[in-house]
Amino acid sequence: MSQSTLRLSPRMEGVEASPTVKLNSLAQEMIRAGKDIVNLTAGETDFDTPQGIKDAAIKALQAGQTRYTAPHGIPELRQAISAWFLRDFGLNYSPSQTTVTVGVKQGIFHLILATVGPGDEVLIPRPYWVSYPEMVRLAGGTPVLVNCDDAFRLDLDDLRAKLSPRSRLLLLNSPNNPSGAMNSAEDLKEIARLLEGTAVLVSSDEIYSSLVYDGAEFVSFAKLSEDAYARTVTFNGLSKSHAMTGWRVGFAAGPINIIEAMGILQAQSSTHITSFVQPAAVEALKRTAEDFAPSLKAMQERRDLTVKLLRQIPGLKIEVPAGAFYVFPDVSAHIAVRGGGSAELAEYLLLEGGVAVVPGKPFGDDRRIRISFAKDLKTLEKGLERVRAALQKIIP
Image (cartoon, rainbow, N blue to C red; front, side, top):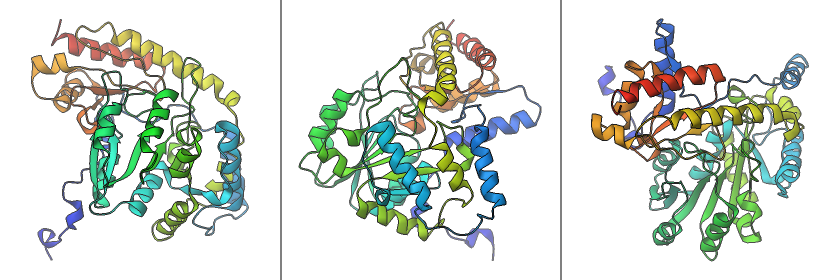
């Protein structure tokens, strides 16, 4: 049988590989080939997983915790997640309302698969995490993009206009990837009021909630009201806060019938997260904001340096991110002079400038590029100087 006869499913039509992974892989290939590249694409910090968490995994492995567990996770982990939501967010979820997933990405995908079908619409504020529209299409649903202003504040009038009887799910992500913007409590309350009386579920992706700067207070959507709590599945995990991206520990909490459906999907796909990682996750959830204060301070210093240096580039416009570890500057002036779009500009920066960034188009905004500041200050200075030098060849 030839490769050309191996037909893919129609659901794969139009579904693309993750551009963030693609750009990061290309940059890594160039580095391995000996090229001097500063990689500012990665969605992870350069911090190491705390030793106590690694020790807990080693202890579990040596104790023989290598067999199957329940799809939702071991009882101790579900209890720890329940206690963590209450301690850090004031959210009262019983252990039976929680599930453990192979990262937040899989959890959101399972929620979409469990609740969205052909004819259903999913509301997605723009800019959005690149995987959201693809997940919706894979489930047979229709992504409906909701506009934000240039400061990344959700356009509530546009949300109101796009709500329809076919609206099934609203995907919130705050702090946001790629912009770093965080929804204010006032805007979240307006969103909650708009949804009252509808059958719209809310997916609240809060994976960056521990990375909030300038002493700002993060507000979880489910905390706003009884109605918001009842319609929301809250997602979080250990990847960003605990420097555990490769461990793949995400979790969700919400209405029991939705959580049970997500557990069924997990049982029929990945079964559960790695067994000996689960005791390490229990250990991780014992840690408080005080434990991570030094890393948060370092990230804020990196953000401040990034904003300062980018503001020195002629023609570039930037909003200060309130959280996460990305900036999403407007480079439309450079694109207008050079031609093409954000992908062509990102390619130019990589090949001519020696710095890897992510084009904004896959995030829903072709005027912008995403730059990660999850690097040490020296690397950031080097990379951002390359961005400046390359862009000033376009607009002096």
